[in-house]
Length: 192
Image 1 (spheres, rainbow, N blue to C red):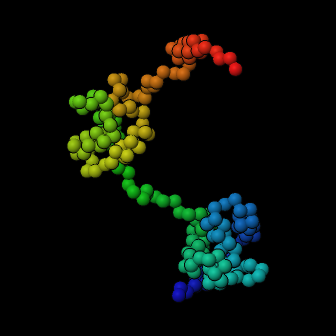
Image 2: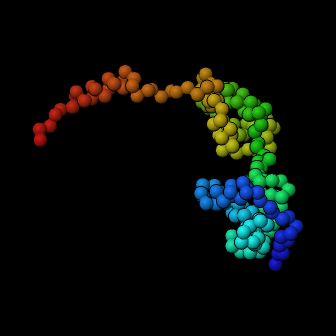
Image 3: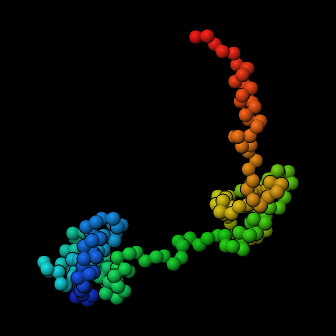
């Protein structure tokens, strides 16, 4: 069983901090973790009117581990109010990105080049294999290529590649209007 050391990092709140934490817990518009951290600090306050609660009591009330209570107290005493309430922002992504700016530029250059022989345009699978064949990456999936290209304005193998251009005839085109009106005029009316 974990042991709490309440006197190792004693929490002493000012009246402004206490009011701020009370507002966070009462309004309920903050994330749940922030509300729980504010409650830990309020109950750990040495100047609390009802008396300070031990780490074990706080952990039982909030259904969290005693070590979590101690970490919140320690962060408040050493780092201040905001680091104790909010989660620490992650410095690096959990998985490093495969495409950096340099590799992305090479992918776009491949996209803008003529499609391979026998193909009218590049597919995601073809682009992925081309990147591997040129030894730009060791492994990459077609989905990663698709997501990377989605962030750019590159089109896969159209004659004037580089910018997405609509090849679909707009709904308000003359040809569409003529065909829809001519079909309406030629249909016989039924007597009901």
